[in-house]
Image (cartoon, rainbow, N blue to C red; front, side, top):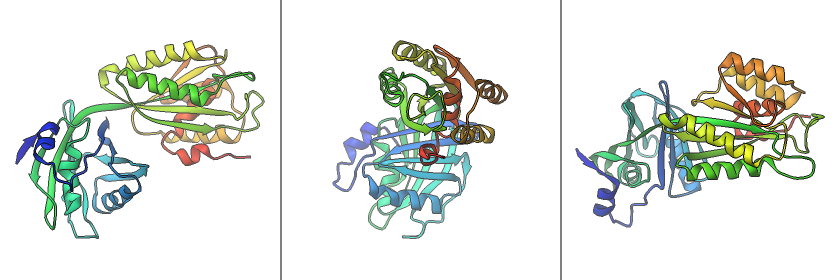
Length: 310
């Protein structure tokens, strides 16, 4: 076994058959770890999603969005039974060790190259433990060690007026600004709410922003987001909601689905948030709590978030 930093790998492996990943991020929530990888290819990386889902018992879900992979995995160890074409690559161990996350990847041929060299060169990787170098007909295996982050999702609603403004663009600019502050801006999901709401500005949507955060900086993220929102909003009804962790409680998703199908009241949002321990923050008013909370329940389901119910 060799222990190598990304700089070591870049210096040693300059072969034309190695294509580095751009970034790897890992977030922890109890016994779940969310692994986010930015692959060097776009649609070609669908092969990796398919193979990892087939081969890895630890993976609960896997999806691709462009060149970004997102795996939800349980901590533990489950050795792989690699078979060419059929089960060619996967994750065989996920472990949280203090402020680090250790993920062991294995794969045959090119997938083995990806297990160590390609991932190991990515931004966000601290080091790799290289067990076997893949390529050709060989098996590759390596542990990729990354910092332990946690997930924070911020729901936002009611930032515009009938005369001007746009919640989705304001939210995205907030995310980009927070990224400049050192937070990992992971996602922006626009959630369609009840289209016949008499209080709506026009399209009646709220937004969820997802971040990867060092555990010691979560409160700083929330405070900074609130101050940016207060500075930028045009509405006197603006509010935020904050979900910490990877899981979406069933009652929260149910609330979000209801907010897409019928008129909701502020009191209902406050009751659900209190029961689930979700923080609601008035920025300029309370009306925005309804949509801000609804955004959280569908942040991990963009297709449903966008769907409109008549």
